[in-house]
Amino acid sequence: MIKAVAVHLCFSMTGVATAFQLPPVPDSGKSTATPTPTLYVAQRRLDIGDVIEGDKRPVEWLLENKGTAPLVIDRTKAGCGCTVVNLKDEDKIIPPGGRLTLKARFDSTARHGVQNKNVIVYSNDPAEPELNLRFTADVKTVYLVTPPGLVNLQSLQRGQQARRTVEFRPGPGRNAIEIVHIQLPDRSPIRLTTEAFPVDNGTGQRLKITVADDVSVGSLTTKATVKILVDDIERTRVIPIRGEIVGDLTWQPKVLDTTRMTSRPGKRLAPVRIRSTEKAPFDILSASAGPAFDVAVEPAKSGPRRTRYALYLTLRDNAPPGPFATTLEIRTTSLTQPLARVPVYGEVARRCLVDPPLVLLRQDGTPLGTRRRVKLQATLRDELKVTSMVCDTQAVTVALDEHAGSRYRHIVFLDIRLEQDLPAGRHEATLTVSTNIAGAREITIPIQIEVP
Image 1 (cartoon, rainbow, N blue to C red):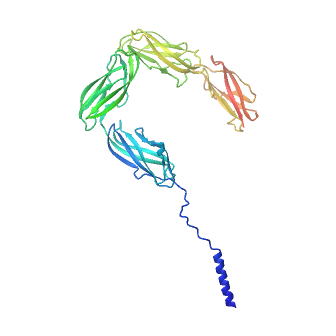
Image 2 (cartoon, one colour; image 1 turned 90 degrees about the horizontal axis):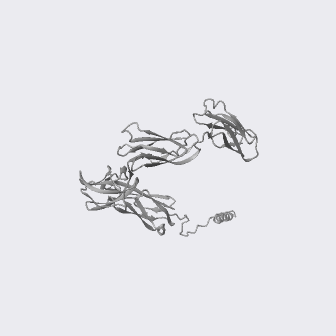
């Protein structure tokens, strides 16, 4: 009996274990991972070898999507303007397992020696959203030009040949250079002639620049397109040219601009210096710059007599505050330039400056928010005196800071305080200060009060 019971219990325990066993997970053959794009480039850095300067060389990378979701290229960015990427909108999506040949073009014009360039590919690859592709090229110089950029002729008279020239030399390992064609704009203000000269490795070519006889006095801005031949390699160079065509006279500056800072009445501006280009004597008959200025003419202290002058503009005491734009007119005895004009720009400062021009008070329970110091400053030659101070609200008090202003005769400090509580919101007030300064007898200072 006992044995039978034992056997029964054993089977019961086995049945319990079987009842609580978890069923096996069915195998569907599919992964539960989120589909992800993966941008792969087997060769991120390319060496495109030697490139003859001026050639345009293609550069290509093979892009692959080794992920499980479509790869979307948002944009590409070349690290230099010499590299242009050609990627159409319809090619910006690469399916899983797909490929794309990314094409770029490297322009070696005006490049010399080893060049390291890059292209950045922006995509939705979460592991590397910005993929940096690089390439290297060794640009072989065809020719050298001096100066390499803008040719500044400075000041020239009509019919005068410039001292500055443009020189073309064959590059390393090359021998002869030849200018085969020069193109200038219609009605060009200059003429160009060529001249051969010897160099260490062969022959160079020099461009000489002459101003035309019939051009007008003033600024000169033009360009020349030069086609050259170096050892059977043809290249084209655009040369920007600038300068100034002058007559008997020239002057500096061409524009008197003082807008970077305000000018007080009585201030003398920087001089305008006028001289004879041929060191021939001339006289200044008159000079004027409008009702706000006095103009003084002073002969130069050095150089031949009556060939150089300096003109000084001084703001008159009654010059109104604010910006000004006028013209300095200089009448001379020059036959070709009897009248010279110089634009003059600037701003007249107020006779009494207010700093800060707007007072902001904030009733926030701190001394910093409820107190401000305002500085009134006249010119050095004036003694500033405040005769009265009136604020249109009783919540604000104003007092002279006698201690702070005791060291200066032309500066006064005001102590402005918020003394009374006001309702929440923004309030505006005006402080009126009367002074002894002509042109600043009454100064109004706006006050803003913020109450949280």
